[in-house]
Length: 283
Length: 351
Image 1 (spheres, each protein chain N blue to C red):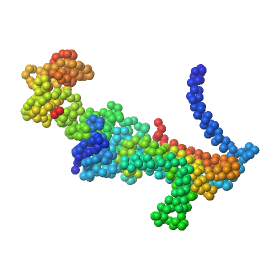
Image 2 (cartoon, each protein chain N blue to C red):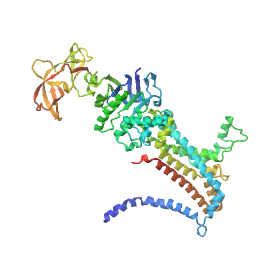
Image 3 (cartoon, rainbow over the protein chains, first blue to last red):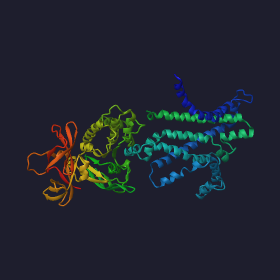
Image 4 (spheres, rainbow over the protein chains, first blue to last red):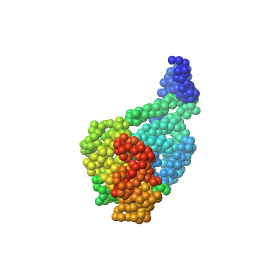
């Protein structure tokens, strides 16, 4: 191989080098360090004590973080599919209106959402007053929303639009004639959605689910403001407590690794499912 | 009751009237073609019959039911799309079986029906293939099978052959024709290809600017076009402009601007009308003898060798005509010849 060829081979790599370095120092290095630190005691020796602490004190919170993130993700997915299908298929005059207002929560930071939820879901907040008007509750013993229920409402409110964006993109890749052909052989809208649109947009839906699950499980502000230190709360709140009140970076790192693992396992499972079932996409 | 009846059917897209008060009856077991240039409203008409578009005015009847406002899934129609529209995530079997499964037929019944229809389109043994593993022609046959397996009251085909190469297209024409005959299924076929329309239709409806110009058998459309648009759209046509001087029985005497007198069949014209006389290349003969009507002196302007035939451009007065003769008669450019236009064949049409 002569010199010119060598340069030609190396040149493309030099072009991605700056972004690779930024990734390495700002993302991969701290990421690896947090994993490493979770296995090291003060003297730098290998230890599992942080994990023992994490699982003994926070087992319930780990479990809670997982299932509330998962539940919110499923509810968001369900609503997002219906909304995206409506936006893909409808021609009614309401469509442009819905098309512009559904994105609204995208531009509101999670901390503001949390603040809104605090007033909306408060014991004498808007939701309970509405329920009172409908005669569904006794306001002297108002239902309590500052637990998983509030988290669910907050997550779904904030995350559904982002899922609609991704899933609608998937729906828009489907040719009209594939949808029309299903109608012509006798499928109503629901049957067509289930048998044609959902399988064909499977990849977009799976990606949206993974992103939202990862985003839910790493959210701090919403559980911090709604639940705070009450039990059960989420891993993110525990990490903050560990660091701010105890200066205990080891256990905080161990809890962080647990949440990486949950997101990672979920993502791998889902992506493999998608690849396994969508052989037809290749070629 | 005719299987399909369109009454005053109209569709507007914003300011454009795509389909303009169409009335049409399709007969039982026939294959009727909607033929016209792009944008003439033929596909819009078909989509309204399918229920994929809702008309602004008028009604669609399938059998004796008014289906104008029924969704496609309630119309008992079979539709074949230009892009085939096979579902890529389903095998050939699943594509064809989908409609049967929706009708909740027992499994064994579904299997035998799919097998039967695959034999019909000559694709036995392809059940487990995915659409991407099939050629264009095979995909088209699967699309046809998917529509036929439901035994619809009407089969609708939207330019089904236009994505195939020329040779396959010609083969499939006859295949569709034979299949349609065999099943005697009422069929509406949309195309912009006149050769396709002539080859496979029982009747053709010629459309232009959202209106039906003429409905008739292929030979009627070709030999007795209702107007200049139909004449120019189907086949090769030369037109000589003039004014009707006199009408005798069905023969019109037409005088051109430079004073030539032509005898032609009169089609819906009256004395004094401005007309265009349709002269097909095959209507132009070399003149023999002296005393006949419609004999003119012509000059060879240009010639193109086409193999068995030679395609000439000739001039008569101010008119340039296309004439096609067998290659054993070979004229030179600028040669003067005498031609005869058969008065029983050439037609005076309203301009």
